[in-house]
Length: 112
Image 1 (cartoon, helix red, strand yellow):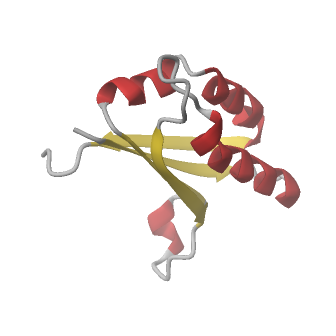
Image 2: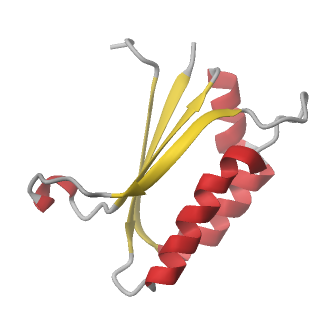
């Protein structure tokens, strides 16, 4: 069963726009940079994201400005990505000083 991995970011107020853009580009590059240790091929099924453009009241976002959605074929792939994948670990290290608040939520479609 596939797993949807939702990541939301609130960048620090003093983060430079070019640094935010570079961080977002690095995140989206994980689609090809994360390689499965066994198959030696990229394993993220899909990955997309961008800046919030919701017409809803900004209070609804609680300061979160950017969102990303990744899909993994299995819990095992998601767990490898989160806990072990060197490309993901490097990305996390590269972005941590830019973030005020990250939020992550994972789910499998239809599981309540």
